[in-house]
Amino acid sequence: MSDLTFISRFQPVYDETIYPTREWAIVGPEGATQVWARKTNLGELLGGLEFHTHATLEDCTNVKCHLLNGPCRHHGSNLIFEDEIKPNIKPFLIYNADFMRDYLTKKYMSYFRA
Image 1: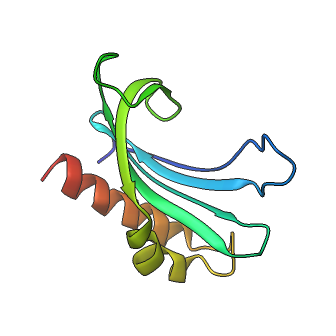
Image 2: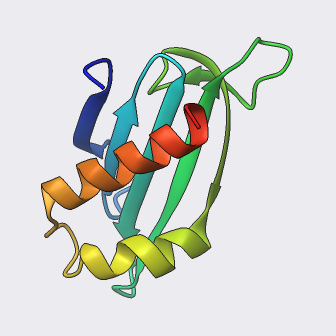
């Protein structure tokens, strides 16, 4: 698993009315698993789990994926975030790095290498 990279960062804010988005990801040769989270202006926590796979320009949903540095197809789930991730990152931005790295690695392995 030394070919996997763990990322933990904030995404840029494009609108001062939106809170910064926190992102965690495992990136490898097959693609990436990503969790993102941000507060709403009401203080609620929104987020999702997404899977990014390499794609051709004709078949992509994102021409310039910031995780794969090229075209990708991605899909995800807000329900998985609510059930499996949100309880582990409350209060917002306080999280266990080992939990997130292990969680995303397991998701990566089951999705890309099962």
